[in-house]
Image 1 (tube, helix red, strand yellow):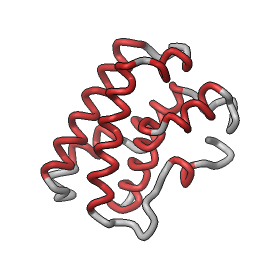
Image 2: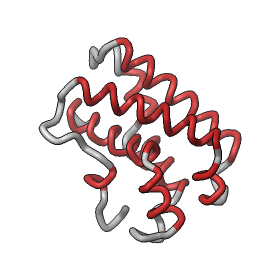
Image 3: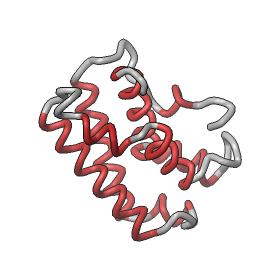
Image 4: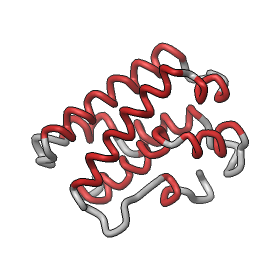
Length: 136
């Protein structure tokens, strides 16, 4: 298991991919980064690579994050999971990026990022740009 700070950074980078329309347009639609930067890969990077569900479960009790951050993490997680469950894994990225329901998920993701910023855990707050590599 990663240490708390590295794990938090991984989660923040994953959430920033969901909050940021620029990433989605450039990556999912225009494929400026890599062909495998997709909606599905974004889901997998957050849920699997960053172990997001486990992170949320530990956020308050073990990590002692502020209650408002934990509540926003749970709200975002529920909205994100509901969106993925409802719309499947192969939806056209143009449709997702334009979907008002997706915009609600994005707004919730941004709220989580704003709460993390208040904690001043990082000298430079991580974004999806920090998570870019040859594997997207």
